[in-house]
Length: 113
Image (cartoon, rainbow, N blue to C red; front, side, top):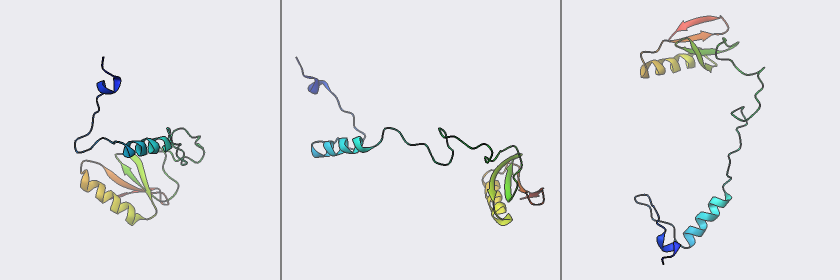
């Protein structure tokens, strides 16, 4: 009869050697220190209570700054028109089929990129 240790097969990635001896115990100790679950983000991510009164809505125009409009949807916000134009130009350079505009919240107007 064969023992369980003899029957067990190990699978290693190419170029990697299995941990043996002190390396194996160090790997197990490191794994034991790692928490099993990751705490939820502090910025209102999944699993946290989000204050809906202060959350930005994607279907309503922002109150301040400059926002990229991509195919009619509000995306990133910027403090200055130059930053928004640079981001819009970069986006159009990568994806020329998109309709990209900049929404100026102060004037409540759309500016072409």
